[in-house]
Image 1 (cartoon, rainbow, N blue to C red):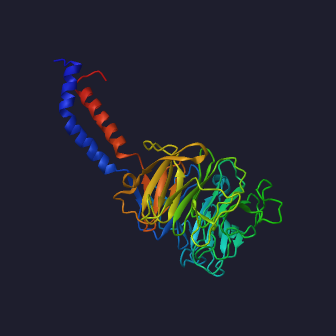
Image 2: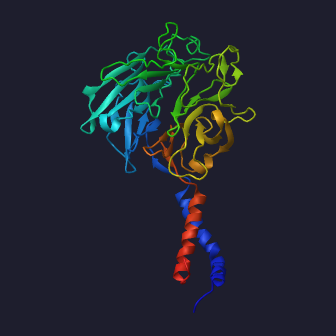
Image 3: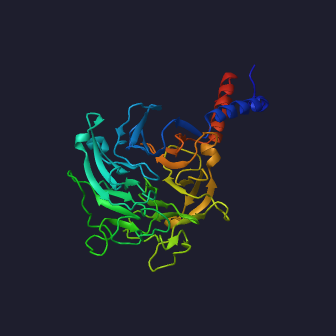
Length: 417
């Protein structure tokens, strides 16, 4: 017997509670995240070359591990554990793949050397499917003071620029930058550096469009100065905009923004400024300082979000509801994830707490880094060894499953679908 559309709808309504239970149960099983690895030893960073299906995870102790097909591989991609100092905030701190990695096999690492305690940037190369140690080339060595914190370590290439490697350095450590390194234009500490690594020999060149190229009073490698510990930074893979998250001291955490095409040369204020305030005890103001686009107070202060910022990414990956074009960041101490929409000049709006949606129940703690896979998918990395992939929100799955269930029911009842 034929059933009218209105009659079919009445039956669907009667079944809605069961369909919702089914869809919600499936959504809860999928969750807002997927744990892709656990048991890592103090992971600090996740990265991947463009289009590569593998994930590369940097461990503080000197290993680069790979996750392939959802499985953490037993054999490291690279083992530098015999060369890396690990006391305090020292360690293997950075990894950047050459934009031409698929063809030339080049990648760059940033670590603190066990013998000299200097920061070392070196180029490695894959040949025949494995890292060929014989092709290793030293690029840069930066002398460090004796303190064991504020070593920076992030590195990256801006989209569309295959020559210049950006390198983040901390001020070298202790409190209040006792050597005033971040404001010293001759020091490479407390800076964002930009060097041309396109040559085939050891070392580097200086691009003529570096902001201080050709000057004798400023080190030509410097792209920006006045940073305390820019631990995790990123380029927007779609626009090339630059996001620099700088770990604060006792009061404020900050995010700095440079639009694509910015000529560089900014002074972000440390040690004079901590976020948008004068650094207590040593700070003040000076002409030409660039204020952060966003900062926040520490836990216990009004609106405090945490005590140690973990910079992230503008999301451009596979669809997460209401996420495209938002900047995601977090905090190592509060173990929370936030995002905001981006206006003109990087101006933030609509700040959201995304912690529960993305890492709730995952077991991740000590949010050390975010990462992107080769297609722009977003990941969170916990110092406790857990890596989580952020996936579409449960509601999206629930609605999809509910719709599919309804269509299947109508098809079986002979309805027009």
